[in-house]
Amino acid sequence: MEDLSRVKKSEVFKHVIIAGAFLFLVASPLLTFSDSVDSNIFSAGAIFILGIILWITNVIPSSLTAVLLIVLFSVFDVLTFEEAASGLGNEIIWLVLAVLFMGIAVEKTGLDKRIAYSLLSLSKGSVKATLFNLIMSAFVLTFLIPNAVGRLAVLLPIGKGIIRSMEKEGGENIGKSIMLIVTYSPYVTAVALLTGASGSIYATGLFETMLGYSWNYLQWMIIMVPMIFVVLIALWLIVLFLFPSRASKISDSQEYFEQERKGMGPISTSERKLLCLYVLLIFLWITRDYHHLSISLSAVIVLVLMFLPGIKLLEWKESLKKVDWGVPILFAAGFAIANAFEKSGIVYLLSDVAVRFLQDFSIFILALSIMLIFVVIRLCFTNFNAMVATLMPVAISFAITTPYNPLWIGMISLIASSTAYLIPTQAIGSMMTFTLGYYNNKDMFKAGGLLTICIIFIALLFSFFYWPFVGLDMY
Image 1 (cartoon, rainbow, N blue to C red):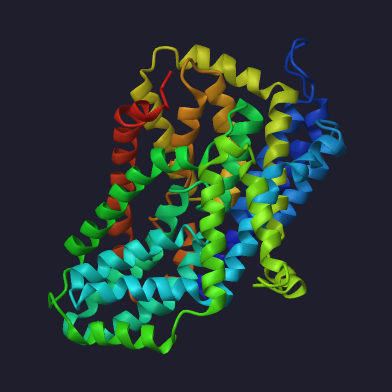
Image 2: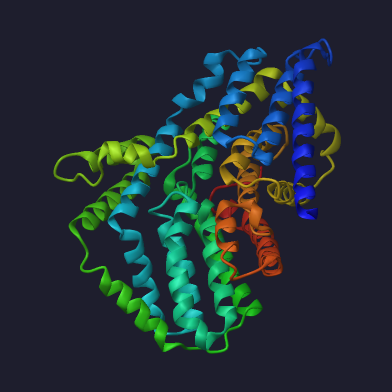
């Protein structure tokens, strides 16, 4: 009864907060700031606050909240409807859709599982090697599946199979280690590649829209992959330290990997075709400076090839049902937020704040503060995409007003936005694995807390000493 009462109070509190935000929005046109500031600044801010509250509370689907924001920006005359909905025409939306379709092809052919079992079979029964190769499987799958939940969905049944084959000799810590790796690895790798997650793809579009900077696929890899690889090694060491296995080598696990790999049969024609298309796509992305095809256009070209006779890896009607069409709408709302911030004058307000309060801050303190603030805010979001769509426009708008490189600050903000490791409700993937019972809240908080500290430390280390060396300067 106590739990039921607590839930009811929580629901009442949510609705009171939402009602308060809505009333503030209704009253916003009557509020004034100064003659030099657009009168729509309060409306833009009120719509943004309402959006954050709706995304955090999840009272309606996140994509529906996105549609609502686009409508409200138009109704309250912050933007015309054409301006508010213009994000749907951004080429980054096409890139998001293309990689979502390609993820469906990976799932259909079984190429993802073949790669994972092939890597795991290299472990030769070693517990440490098995855990490391499971992490590396998540990293390799980032090239094929542009969605953290999608990668987790592939690794989850594999992880459960490994636990069954190793738990008897290795003890219950094996289950904790493997399931936390399955939970964390797909999210750690979300920012490793430009196409590592929909949120990362959206961020590249935002950098181009707000800063006029167009990312190169290879350049993103050079900047981010070394850092993420170090974070993945840190994750490996953390689970080995916190949850040691009773045995260092378990022969049954090697037999399990070999059986699963053989059970898939020889590599199919469809898998070969898909591998060739991915090689072509990555080649086009890496050589963009020579042929001048945009990253989005290259992805759409390869997408079209997947449906052509002779290749035909997917059926059009079947694929349409599997794509999450809410993702592009969510990002269109993010572009609308960025547009509204600029047009209403919030960007200039942030500029004044930056000049008054941050002029004496060192760049290290500023970077550390941004990371800590974003890590705390991330506790309230259950969706990386929603977090990025909501707060990246704010971060970049703020960064523009500082004397530092806004692209540098933007990348730090993106890394911090991906930290979803402390409590189960921070990510859909965490909620999926937590309910299985292999680890508890305390286990997650210990491992996730150490991982978050490592990410902050490693990100700051790389951003100050490695990024400038490869072309991403602080100033």
